[in-house]
Length: 115
Image 1 (spheres, helix red, strand yellow):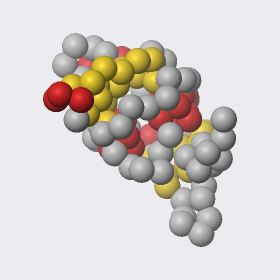
Image 2 (cartoon, rainbow, N blue to C red):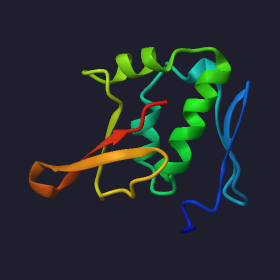
Image 3 (cartoon, rainbow, N blue to C red):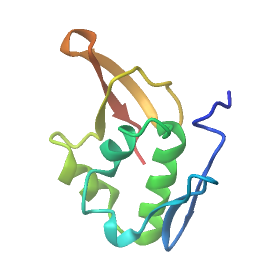
Image 4 (cartoon, rainbow, N blue to C red):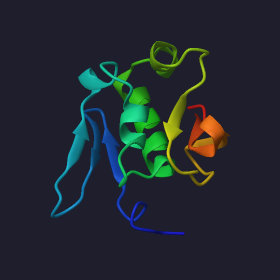
């Protein structure tokens, strides 16, 4: 089902990943930035991002750049599984494998699907 978060798509090529939205503007992540920060958590914190569209696009951008998704996950996640924390439960889909409530249900630990 399409909603405000899913009606805009991510575009991927060897120059990175871009989310096109007018009049708000474009959001671009270049390959040289991929390993600089935890982009999964950073993007999960944005109210306009749908993880089920962002995650597959981000993983594809990683493959096209020749960088290692496993190294990214290892760098930003303790046990080798990509996870993020969200305030609200997400939809299970192309990017989200599962989630569990944490902190007495005040947040959700979300497991990201493997690339």
